[in-house]
Amino acid sequence: MDKVCVEGGRRLEGVVTVSGSKNAALAIMAASVLAEEPIILHNVPRIGDIHTMVELLNDLGAPTQFRNRTTVCIDPSHILELEAPYELVRKMRASFNVLGPLVARFGYARVPVPGGCDIGARPVNFHIDGLRRLGANLYSEHGLYTAVARNLIGSTIYLDFQSAGATQHLMTAACRAQGVTIIENCAAEPEVVNLAEFLNSLGARIEGAGTTTLHITGVDRIGGGEFEVIPDRLEAGTFAVAGAITRGDILIENAVEEHMRPVVNKLEEAGIELTSDAHGLRVRSADQPRPVDIRTNPHPAFPTDMQQLFAALLSIASGTSVITENVYESRFRYVNELNRMGADIRVSARSAVITGVPRLTGCPVAATDLRAGAALVCAGLAAEGMTEIVGVEHMERGYENLTEKLQGLGAAITGGSNTGGGHRLP
Image 1 (cartoon, helix red, strand yellow):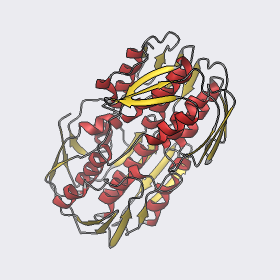
Image 2 (cartoon, helix red, strand yellow):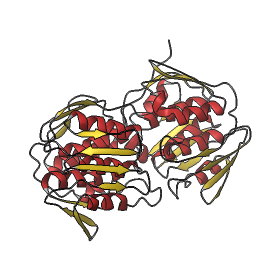
Image 3 (cartoon, helix red, strand yellow):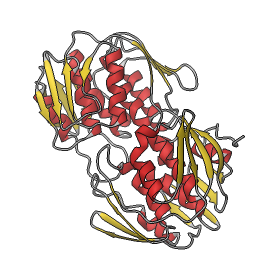
């Protein structure tokens, strides 16, 4: 999808269903190469990154396909290829996470340096250092990492930063290491917990998921099984902001408030009414949002993937807000585009100072990455006139049917290639 057009000024109302978590599904699919029997995954989103992972697993010799709309079948029992192709790995950072499980199971693997959204430096040194602590020999040549190990050996690994990707990668590899592995200062995101639950369901022995210390006792074999991916908390947060910025009334089905607590807290601080029950999260807003200050950090702090969405919301707040980005150093590239729409945002080092304005005005803008694209869509929903967003192919990587779901809530938005959406509240 090359362009999305949004006619602003419509209040969103209705029910929208959140898809499965992109980040959990990708980690689980990468970890599946550790298994020696078929795997069935439910609640998998049909998005660009998932299709890239499907291609990657097929290229490795693990037949992978969608059985229905949200169910993926993977058969990793006869993997033959131990080198991941550059043309797939360059598209998506999560593809690098096949390196550890491949070397853990087969003793050898080659994976190129990964790609993904351009949001600043995201080195793989935590991954590499951790695999070396587990006894793998690794070297880099011509943009390829090669890993060799007769057997991985359990060790204590301390992560200098609570990286979710590195935690998932090393936790997976350690499942087949001899002895006990302890990962300290690890990430505690819901997606890390979901991966641990998946691996344990296949016979792994992981304790401490959801805390900052993991204990993994290696096993000789990882079997197959059936598992369900958690709902996507970032998609739920996106719809919550869309409802708030249009002063709407929406029910976000499948949203898990426990996974979204930092986002919910900041929305409530901004004056948005939120209620949670067994069906999901209801978002209601009738007034201009209040200003709030936000500092991004690893879970359970405010997620870096939501700060762009909040920048759009706070652009029309009744005062001045400050967003401080502590995870990535180049995640304010979208600010110029919001300012083109009439926002008043000044960036200094790692902080963005946002002075609320009475209204935004639609104009042509460009998405710089996945979440920036979603933020511009939300800004367009609240703006006067038409907003044309180019570069939104980024959004297909991470959102399933975003355009159609917003249409189902009453948004005047066109563009996109998927089908399915929201519906009106009864």
